[in-house]
Structures are given as structure tokens and as C-alpha cells.
Image (cartoon, rainbow, N blue to C red; front, side):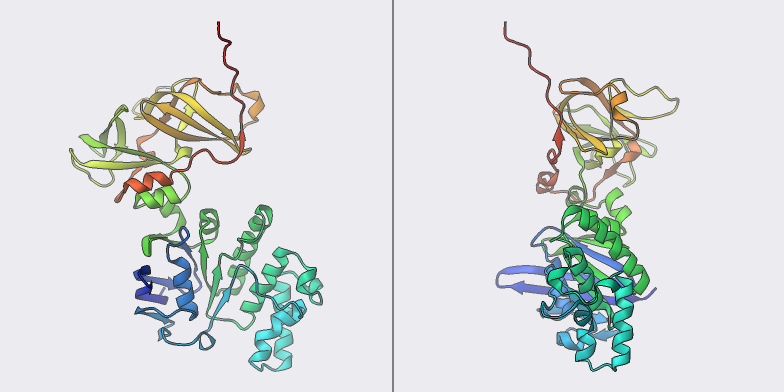
Length: 392
């Protein structure tokens, strides 16, 4: 599959601030591509340069083999959907969708066919005569999408399009967006700071940080095999372990960490003894149990004695923080069985945490600032702590 949209060493500065620093990337035709990162990382600036609302200081942008770097927005077959929908309040849903076709002087029959087709696509044919003030936020978003797609642009840009919606509606719109993309087959470039949105929608994700692309890969690879501490911490949650390789044993190595017992790791990077290593282990890979895991012949499992320090109940799962040596470790336990039938783990319990060496991943890059991105206990129902014993 050939590259359809190409950024070639694109740089954009605002005074002393370099918002985008020599970024090169390519997007394939029909792909759902996401730019993901925290506020100020440069993702929206990239989107605005693609839409023609900003001009790069250097570098070129190509669309379907054509250099569009210096073209004004109206001469690019690129449409943008913003957070605030930007619907015309004095026009009906039908008229809003028809607007771009009327401006382009399409024949009336083609306008009617195109608008009616879009209304069927977004399942709003029954609301065609309503005004924006008479429909919900999710319906406004669908109208904005239909208006942007009705004249078949080459690329649809979506700038945090679900940010103004509540959680339930946002989850519903994620599914709607995915269905619409599959049906129209147009290239989508989606900007978001929400990891869940990007992971659930995208064919590939470019994770951005301070004007650079940290990693560009499919969602599963970004989550399971992050290349840097920033990516590991920004995409979901993780546990970091910092240590030195002391022993090599075939495909595995032993990692010695200060204030913690040795960790057995899968040595996928072919690290030699004496090398410093940063290891990422996702919370869902770590089990917390009252008893140690049953011995299994030939298995190599990291097992640590620890103490429960925090518990947060989230409905579908419970998250535990345990203290093992000098390390605070996060673990997630999914609720696949009826929780009330089980003896609960509670504050202060002495437990075991354990994981398989294959479930950790060695990072290629790590900075001390990356550790600050590791999430603390999330908002949720915090299970009550047991009462302290009275003083005697």
C-alpha cells in the first residue's frame, strides 16, 4: 500500500517555541491514523498545517503525490471537524449538511442525493428538519461529520471531536466513528490526548512529545512494546524497574534493582551483563494473591512478598498498590467471577505479587521525567480501610 499523505521534515515555530520539530511521517490511503500526546506536544499544530490553517517554517506536505504545503485551505480536499461542531444555528440539519455542496454549485439533484445519503449514514433522516438547538451533542457531532464528508474529501481531520461529550456518549460515538470510517473509506487523521480513544479507533498511532514523534506503530505494539519510558507511561499505566543486568541465561537475564530483589526478564534486546536496564511491566500482567503461585515444572516466575497499601474498586476490576521492598507496585485484577463469593484482599494484608518474565518489556529510552507520568490511584470507589486497633 503506497503512502497517501506525507509529512517530510516539517518544522513549525511560534517565537522561541518549536511546536513541531522536523517531523516526518506517512499515512496510507483509507487509514484511520491518530496523533496522540499531551497538551502542547505539537499534534494540533501538525493537523492545522495539514488543513492549511498554519504554514510550516520548513519541510513539505504531500497529499496523493501533490505538494499542498503552500495551498490555501479552500484548494485542499481536506476537511476539519472541531470540538465545537461549528454548525450554522439558523440552518436545519439538512441545510447544514448541504452547505458545502451548495457553495460548490452542485446540481440540486446531486445535493439532495448526497445529503439524503449522509442522513441515512448517520441515522438522522428523521431529524432532517430540526435545528442544531433541537438536537443532542452526539447528534450535532454526527451532523458535523456528515457535513464534512458529503463532498467526499481526500482526508478528514478530527481535532479532539469528542472532548465536549460525556463518557457514555463519547463511548457510543467512538463506535459510530469507527462504523462511518469503515463505510466511507476516507482517510481519517484524528487528534486526541485520550489514549483510550486512539487505541480503540486507530489503525496506527503516532505518539508525540515536545514536537517529536516518540513512536509510530499499531495500537497493540505501542501498548505491549513501548520504545520509551514516555510512551509506556502515557499509554495506560505501568510499573518501572531500574537496574543492572547481572547474569545472562539463554533468552533471559537477571536484573538487579536497588531496594528490591532480583527480577528475571526476557532479554529481547540482547543486553549484555553490566548494562543498565529500564523495565516496564503493565499492572494487568501482575497477579496479587494471598498465597504464592503453585509451582509449575520448568516455569520461571517472578514472585515477591509484599504488603497492600491502597485499593481502588472500579466495577470491572480492582486496582491494588502493594509495597515490595522499596518499590510501590500497581496491579489490576479483573472481575471475571462474582466478587462477593471471594475472600477479599484488604489494606495491610501480606500478599504475593508475581508475573512471568515474558510479561516485562525493556525500554530503549528512559528519562527520569518519565517516572512522573506513572498514574497514582485513579478516581473510583476506594474500599474503606480497616479500623485501627485502639490504643492501650
